[in-house]
Image (cartoon, rainbow, N blue to C red):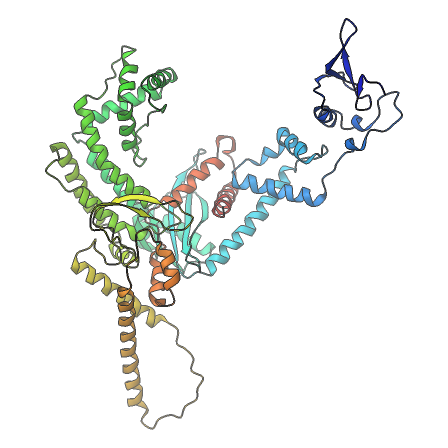
Length: 608
C-alpha cells in the first residue's frame, strides 16, 4: 500500500516544489481540492460524503476494488422522515416561521449532516402547509373538548391593525379545568371589514361564541374602556369587566397633563430623542457609561399608549444622569439636562409611579387569579396616594389629581363582580404592617412581588367598609339561592300512596323545603366564612381544589368569578404574536392562515 495515499487512494499527500511530501496537506483525487490533515480522516470522509456522494462510493480511475463499508450511503427510513416532517411543521407553527423556510438549502444541509443521509430532501411547502392544517385541527379539537367540559368561560377581546392595514379582533378564553388549573386559550384572530360601531362589535363577539358553542357558558367579557366596547357590552348577555390596567394608565396620563412635572419630563423626552435617533450619539453615551462604571443600556422612549413607559424613561435618565451630562457636553446643542431640582422632582414621581407599575404587572396574568386582586390593589393605590406631611406641593397636586380621576373610573368598573371575586379568594396576610408580600398563584408561574400596605386581605374584605362587606355577603347569598332554584329536580323513583289530604300536605312540604333550602344556604355561607384564612404565599386555586368537596356550591361560584381576567392583556398578547406572523414579507397572508397560525402557536406554547 502506498504510504502517500489515504482512504484507498482517494486522497494523496501534497507534493512540494522541491519534491518532498507535506504530510499536513492532502489532495482530493476527485476534485483536486487541498485539505488539511491532522492524522484523522473524519474531515476527509465528510468531504467525500458532502461533495462526492455518487463518486465517493466508486473507485478512482485505475482502481478495481470498491470503497470501504464506512462510505456506504445511509438512507433515512420512512417512519423517521414522517416524524421529521411533523417536527418541522410543529416548529414552523410554534415559532411563527414562514412556510418557505423549507426551501432553505442551509436547513437541508444541517439535517443531512445530523442524519448522515446525504440524499435527504426537505418536504415541500404544500406538505408543511397540510401538516400545519392537520395539527391545527387536532389542537382545536382538544381546546373544543376542554371548553365542552367546563361550565363557565370568561373572555377577553381587543382589536388590532396589521402592517397591511387590516383589522383583526383577538379573543381569548379563560376557565378552570377539573383540577382547578386556570387555562387560557386563544379562540380567534378574526379579520373584520366593518367599522367598529357597537352593533358590529357585539356581533363579532357573538360570532366567536357561536363558533365555539359557548354562548350559554360565557359569564364575563374583559375589554378596554373604549366607548364602542362599552356600548357593545350593553348589547351582549355577558357581564362586562373594564380593563383595570387601562384605567390606571389613563389616570396616570391625565395626572401628568399640565402638571408641575411638565418641564422636567419635556427635557427628558428631548434628551432621549437626541440619543435614540442617532447611532453616533448612542455610541458616545455608551462610552461615557463605561467611563462612569455604569451598565451599557439605551434610553427608554416615552410612548403615550405604552404602559409605564414614562416611569421607565425617568428611571433610565436618572441612572445615567452623569454619563448623559458628559455626553451632551461633547457637542454644542440646545439639549439641556434636567436640573438637580427637576431630578429630585422626578425621583418623587418615580416613587409614586412604581406603585402603578406594580398593579399593572400584578393584574396582567393569564395563569393565575387576577380578578380578586383588583379591589385590594385599588385600595393600595388609594392609600399610597394619600397626602403626607413630607410631600412637597407638586407631589400633593399629582396625588390629588390621580386619586380624583381614579375614583371616577372606579365607579365605572363592575364593582359588584369584583367584590364577589374578592370574597371568594381565601387568602390573607396576617401582618398588619406594610410588608413585601409574595403572590404565588400556581406551582409553575413566576411569583410577582408587590408591596401592599395594610390591605393584603381578600375573603375578610378588609379593603371594604363594614356596610359594603355585609352587602357583598348578601349578594353571594342571593347568588346561592339562584343556583338552588336553577338546580335540576332529582327524579323520585319511589311510588308512595297519595295522602288523603293532598293540598295542605303539599303546601306544608313546599314550605318545609323552602326553609331547608334557606338553612342550607346559611350553613354553606357560615362554613365558608369560618374557614381559616390562608397565607399570601398560598395559591387560591390549590385551596379550592382541596376544599371543593366541603364547599361545592361556593366552589361553583368561585369557578365562575375567579376565572375572569382583570385586564384585556391576554388578548393584546395575541397581537404581539400576530406581529411575528403578519410581517412585511407576509403582508398578503390570508386572514384564515393568520388565524390558524396565531391560534396554533398560542395553543402549542401553552403546553410548554
